[in-house]
Length: 320
Image 1 (cartoon, one colour):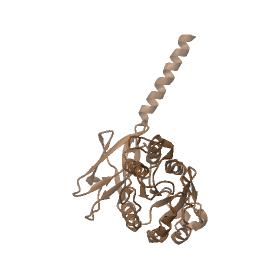
Image 2 (tube, one colour):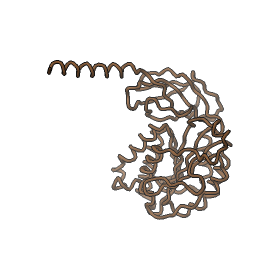
Image 3 (cartoon, one colour):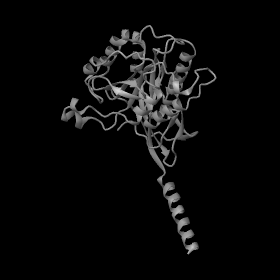
Image 4 (cartoon, rainbow, N blue to C red):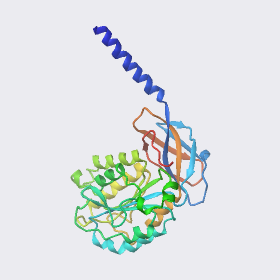
């Protein structure tokens, strides 16, 4: 009987391994930014993707159509109230997005994201979203940690505010649009202890990077001081973490200088909008048996820099 049970166990294990091996490659997508001062229309032949250091066959490279993205603006509720001077810039940025763009504004509070006034989900009513922006509370440490908030948000990405869409719009809308996050925060992780330059390896920041990579979401950020921190080590630490987040997800960390609030957010908001317009959806096969794979990209286009996540999860679809 013992030999019989052992044989069955070995057979089941062999069958499971064989089934996984037969899964083979699965179509996977990543958002890639072609950053060039020279206007270009990249094709699949212009991009080389290596998955775990092996060249992958790129099956498609498609531009994001104007108005075809979802943009989440996440504002740290603990920012200094001097950010009030940027409210008109934020409103102008939202209303200047291409018609059809779906936007969500949320406030990072107590480790999660609460929607601003107005729609609880993404909506293409840009004027309504802009009108609903409010000044942050300015209470030190209100976000708890912006990285807790980000992880929670990308794992529980809000749906569309269906009441804002007509039946025709609901039927015509794609099932999954490319997603972008812009965080306005000082980037400090208060749960990682000291902000010393010798203590810049936060597990919570690393988890936020991985969660965004799994969701296929590039994270951009604009540095702005929190009510509870001045210049110095805290600012250095926060900007360092925001740079780590941007590099891992294919976004950008935007700031003036160490510890300095921007004179105006308008140029950074414009840069973010231009980055969306330069973003393409790359489709390629990845071994379905792996949890995460490393990405390396290169292009034959002259004077062109690429931005993309450093890792993706097999089977991730960012647009369909």
